[in-house]
Amino acid sequence: MRTLLDIAGLSVAYGHVTALHELSLAVPEGGIVALLGANGAGKSSLLKAVAGVVRPRGGRVVFDGRDITGAGVPARLAGGLVLVPEGRRILVSLTIEENLLVGAHLRRDPDGVQRDIAAIYDRFPNLGRRRHMAASCLSGGEQQMLAVGRAMIARPRLLMLDEPSLGLSPLFIGHLFALIRELNRDGITILLVEQNTAQALAVAHKAAVLELGRIVMAGDPAQLAGDPRLAEAYLGRAAGEPAALH
Amino acid sequence: MTGYQSGLLVILCFNVIAAYAVYLPMAAGQLNLGVAGFMATGAYAAAYLTNEAGWSIGAAVPAGGACAGLLALLVAVPILRTQGIYLALATFALGQVIAAIFLNLDVVGGAAGYPVSAYAGPGAVFAATAAILAAMLLLSRTRFALYLTAIKSDPVVTDLMGVNVRAVQVGALTLGAVIGGLGGGLYGHHFSFVEAQHFNVALSIFTVLYVLLGGVQTVWGPLVGGAFFTLLPEVLRAGGGWRYVLFALLIIGVMALRPQGLVTAGAHWRPRRRAASRAPSRTSGHPGPETRLSTEVSGS
Image (cartoon, rainbow over all chains, first blue to last red; front, side, top):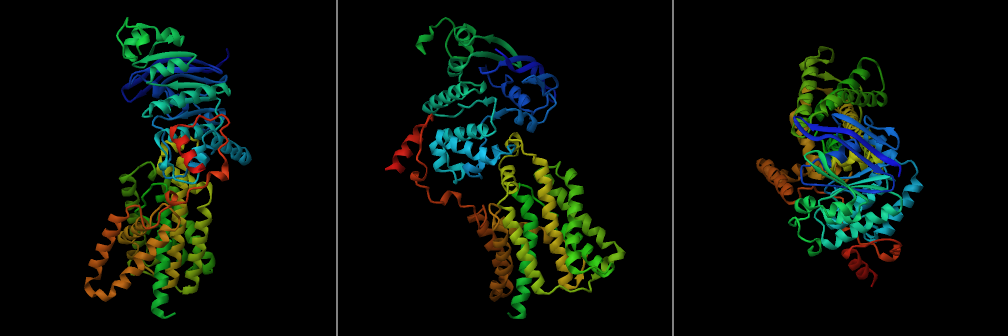
């Protein structure tokens, strides 16, 4: 499978604190790659560096064959690299529709934007019904749907999701992972950062585990799910305990 | 209209114009505590152009606004590097520096003030205020206004959506300074006199209060806040010497009861649209539990 995003030797540091140590990762086109790991492992830093909001200390980011290491956020967005940030970050003082319009900032085809907004309302009827209401009136799950919708308006080829299930009800988490599968079937490559390890492994085609800014395990999700070290650290069960119990 | 009424209305107009100068950057979350400096720039520049260069008022006042805007553009980049309270302090200091420069500039009269020979009557002030209000209403329907609110709400995410946050902020501060400069130029030509002492800290702070009191959520906020602040002390005149005490208490009361300002966007209170206008054609959606529930409720 063709590589859409190629991260090579990427280092990110905040002052003296190093968040990523020469990390390399390839995201194949059309795939779902899950990044797992504890808080502070560097998962969010990786996504931010790829999105262009954090400048890396070293290394290269190649997207669709182009070196974008020095590119700004707008150039990356225009190329189809879109991040849904952690905590949803809905613009609460704007209406639902205005949130989507901000997401469409770089697009120059108003008719296409209107069609895409209508498609988002079809997908999430609850957003459509309340399109002229302040986004603050949405529930946590609906806000996450709006955050995904706002990213979809930018026409992503690679959608990066930072902890999308954080703070959602179990039912909504189920809907969210179904949505991720569906977007992927529509042809969008997904790079998913999750603490919800079991769900992330179930949906991903490839997974990597980060620890202190380095990839410590990577490979087939099914294999990783059976790995006793991962089970112990992130799935909350003792090594050797059968997975069926959970 | 009596002289008192038209005089009061003129002051109201100047306060409202100043309020819009503060409103634009504040809509993007930036507190400009130096608006008096931009007004002074516009006042002195326009007065100089009519007095010494023989310009008409109609040309000199916009030129004064342009001068204030140019000054804002020059200082915006270094000033907007600061944020929050430091930005407020930087604009505060800028306003003081500008006023102090004019106070020592002998070519425009220095501390003695600067008489202005050309006169703009109340009608010109009303017309200019209406034009600025109309321009603000038009602006509020643009993407630029949307981005201002987005930046105030969350600058990081707005940047993530590809909006050039810095450019929008510089634009808001500059456009606000242009409006402040227009107001200053008009002020000098209406009262036939410009003195640096008028453009002091109190003017800047009161103007910020008009905007905070009116609210920054909609374009009507500064108008309502400015009018409230101008008219209320007049209404309280019956209270004699106690009127400023009453006035201060009322301000505190309004701030405590409506911290979001007198005028709010009201998006919460807009009537729910009937689902019938957009039948939820769930082609491929995964509506959450809440979604299903409210579909049933509103469809029944």
